[in-house]
Length: 84
Image 1 (cartoon, rainbow, N blue to C red):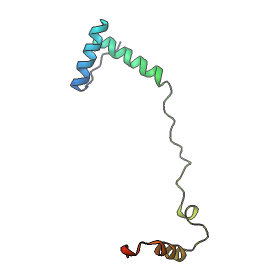
Image 2: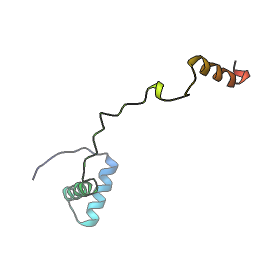
Image 3: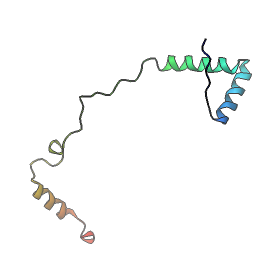
Image 4: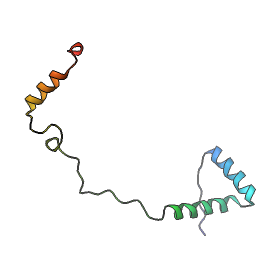
């Protein structure tokens, strides 16, 4: 068995001591059971992010078929005249 030291917020420590006392467990047993439960609930490590994905470039999104000047003019046409 490995001995270790951890730090937890005081409120959590109080709740865990109460939880353990009601079940007649030691605090160490409570942590062991909690760790075992975590390993059951999350058995596999999260998948590593894929290195192959890259965000789309601006040429692959947005308005198709408009030149930058046409797009600028379309935006200007839609502006609220009070903002000009």
